[in-house]
Length: 193
Image (cartoon, rainbow, N blue to C red; front, top):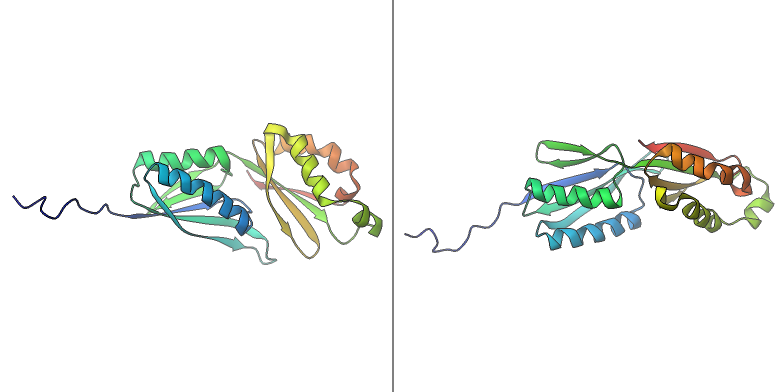
């Protein structure tokens, strides 16, 4: 008789933690969070309540987290979140945690291009521009991948590229890397995959 007297029960909230195996600067993670927030709002799933980065000893980002306070943690809601990430950034080795349940996910592979910032002749640093490297990489990769973030260290600048397959991205970039002066003595590292 009194079960509806006080209205509907407040939905139980759940905490969802997404750990992306992605080296994203906080500003780039925030861009992803903003886009994910729109999906969460549209699907009535919840809202972003936090995020952070795990750092290497040298200050480079190892991985990053996005935290969600969810009012809907159903399989369908989790599916919406994972589908969004699949279509934006979903590096292999990523995981979603809800309670004690961990869901591994990831389709994209990562390529780190570490440009030598100290050992090249001065005229190369004066006459070459990292922005030109960035633009050329984006052009060469087409739909195979794109730069999602970067790192400016004491001796290197890294561009973090995520896409379908590391080897395909590397082969598309290799002729440019081998010929552009600023790419001399660079390192190419598989960062997800």
